[in-house]
Image (tube, rainbow, N blue to C red; front, side):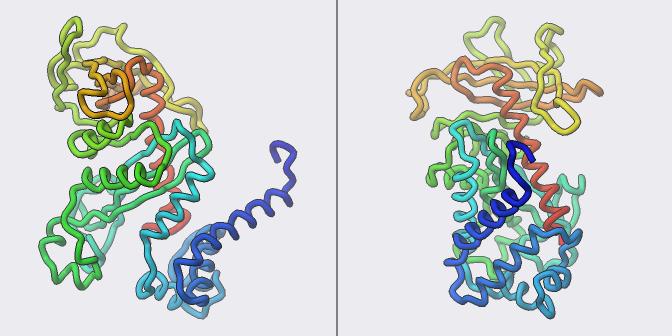
Amino acid sequence: MSGGTSVEETLELWARSLRSAKDRMAPLFTQKRVVDSACAFLDVLIGNEPRKTGWMRAEAAGDPGPWRQQALLGRGHWDADALRDVVRDYVIEHLGTEEGVLVIDETGFLKKGQASCGVGRQYTGSAGKITNCQIGVFGAYVSERGHAFIDRALYLPKDWTSKPERLKRAHVPDDVVFATKPALASMMIERSIEAGVPFRWVAADSVYGVGDVERTLRRAGIGYVLGVKGNHWFGSWATEPLIAGEAKDIAAGLPDQAWRRLSAGHVTKGERLYDWAYLPLADLDAEEFDCPIAGPWTRGLLIRRNIADGDLAYFTTWSPKGTTTQELVNVEGTRWRIEEGFETAKNEWGWHR
């Protein structure tokens, strides 16, 4: 073990941490038997079973069948948002730094039938096509200490929110109304700010690149690297030469010297190297947009080019003036952490079940 820590000491640390996590969530459940079921459910989730269906979880927990866990997840009365807050606070206690990044992304859960809440025919990147699924929007906290999910929201299409009886059958709270995915992301960002989550940046893909999320972050004085489509229009002022046009056309006109090969982070196979171009477009003083962080901020365009095939990706950026290209690249590079989280959750915890 690194740092001279023995296997026994490491196992005791894990056991102590798990007991602490259980103690934090126990007050959310009113009866001891429900607490026991919740703790057993957690034990099974982090266990070694390769598949975690209801029956397999029950067997691992020592139950005669899946009914206790089904009752916990389906019929039990406990506050899921309160549990979310417990998890968030635990994550920040252990991983929080002032340089943290909040990463927003979505994933799909393939489903059959029409009964599951929010299910419908919609596009999901998980399958790469329009299919019958649920869509969840997630927030993950990333820092040099690690990364973990801290928020989530189920996206409800208009085909659901326009049908009160359907919502009622799925036990959706009465105050839930239609919200776009960027609106859900903005609510997550605002919750994190109100809870005192320490983060300087937000990173997200092109679903969240314009509108609600940008406005929320600018007002809060938080920088961002948000994906946009190739046809997104960018314009500059007070630059020489002036820049104006769609992102893909701006990229096509860049000279070779505008590109720099930089790493977006280290993975098991090595550095994630791409060619990058960064174009500062305009400087605005914080007073002009009621930002609490004084001084000039820079709006910019960041472009990523795949070394192997030349494929391009585009990002709108907002950062304190003087932020380097490498800093922006580092922020964009945190996005793969949430993808890693989705993969782990679906493979190890049975999210796709």
